[in-house]
Image 1 (spheres, rainbow, N blue to C red):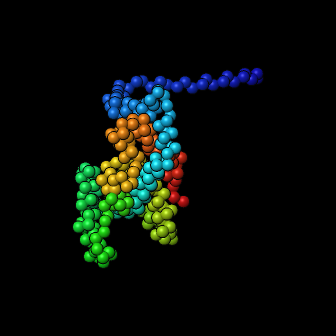
Image 2: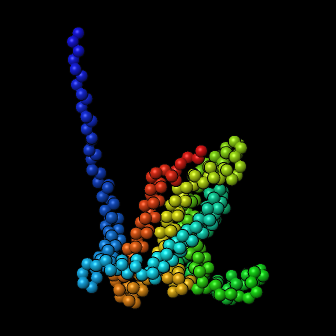
Image 3: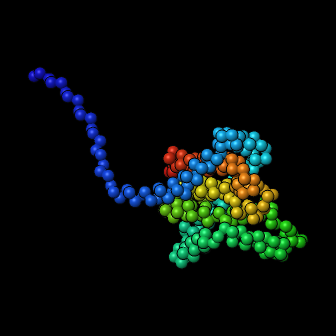
Length: 293
């Protein structure tokens, strides 16, 4: 018998998917985002690169070369980090309690979390200033608990700033954590305990890895917004603790220095994008989704 050479198999051809007209429903959303986000950002890019004599990088040179503006950037990063850490430490146990609540208690707790989001940030911040006045409830509690002898100044201090920022952004940390924790099977903790794992080992080897996606989402959300906060720092501490948003406002409204304000805005946008891309990278690489060992 004469063997015949085998013919190579034909390469599989990719089938083209027919165009789905339903995809057109995203066009209004894309057009809206281009109008309210993309076009202003492009305008900021142009302002940051346009000096008195045309194209110039002097705006970035002024921001990154002046110790005052470098300190402003560090102040914003410090504000974002402290706010993120504080909301995480307070929000994690709150989200866990919320996910384990049952029936009407869970409905009540969810309502308490959502209620602050329905109030304007300006209203909440003014309420905090009233609470922390010398005759406010915070000083009253400290005096009656014998922590201090007489009322002290709390408003226009860094304590008031961090306290107010954590208060404002706490719900934004709790909600992503809760959305992940409610999907975790509570029997996993019981299984770990039945295998001899203590509460601490169960938390670090089971609960914490499973809730890592919520931590990544909450941290990226809170930090990217807190680092750009304007209203709360302006009302609680004013010019004593300058942030990038306040410098931008003064550059545009008072100094009329559009290049300075736009350069600071682009640096702020770059910081927010780095945080978001880092969170996306962690999620894609599976760092936040590793199964417990």
